[in-house]
Length: 456
Image (cartoon, rainbow, N blue to C red; front, top):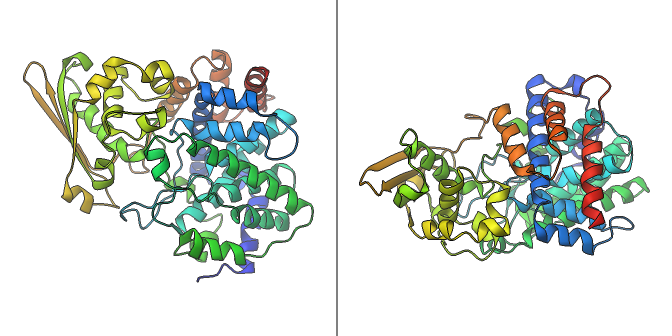
């Protein structure tokens, strides 16, 4: 077993508590703003779903942990499967692949809860978000999740704990203990659950958030944690291949967060190359869903395994390549509205999904982890055939989404949950920084949304 030593563990807490935006490279801050905006849009889109709203009404919003508010916000943050910021991993070609860590949706609920309870300020929220997410990204890239496990609730509790300590003004030692204690409580649930349509996957995020906040409270009450349990879990029980150097060296000089991706679509990342290829194949044709006779998708092994055309839940739809291709063709995009109950029940989408054939292309499987190639052939009713191949999905650092694309995705996912003027103000504040004297946009947005949600 590779052990994380006390010195490197302490460096994580010192980095997190010492981070200030004025010391961060501009390109890192810019990406952190986009990631925060994108994560917020995914969370707010999740709050549009009836099951999430029922959860909020069923659980008390405050009181002792696990609190209903944190559980609900955590579940909402990953409900759309639109959450971005997955960690890079050197074993991305393993089959089944190493799922990427997603610390951002575990961190954001802590920030929103704090913003709703008292004055924090958008700048401080962004600092806490960047610090906690960067450490979570490093934890994901510095260890390999065991085959068959899902990352939600694994790397996130430590990041949530860090965020809670930072927003409470804790010390570096408290931040270190909080991270180690939060990380010692991984959910360690299975990837097969969401692939089969189990929406309980989203509760794992909420539970991870609560575990992190509880860890922060205990650390601030004087509990001191050594890194032994972290090492045993992340290089043995839940993960393997722990690299303490990747986790804790070059903090503030090497930024893992900028090597992550932003999702264009609210579905499993493995499906995104096919969706990009559909768009490329039909570009300039003027064809719409009614013109489609059939779609053939050749892709890498794991994406090819997600071939169910009959779906049992919105989560199952997000892990169905045929359903997501059909949704893209009908809606022109894949976002929060696509899989709401009324969207999921549309006969036009289901019928078109049954005309999407999926096969594995062994050469594409062999291209992982550097590439995730996919080829799509679209046959139109007029007899014409249109084919396109992509080597990687958009949203990666090599082909990033623009700020305008992230803002448009945010607005689509939020829908009418938030008044349009406040949406515009949030986009402006998070994209470019708050206007003078206007440093509490997130707090105002959060209080309004939670008041409506918790009132039932």
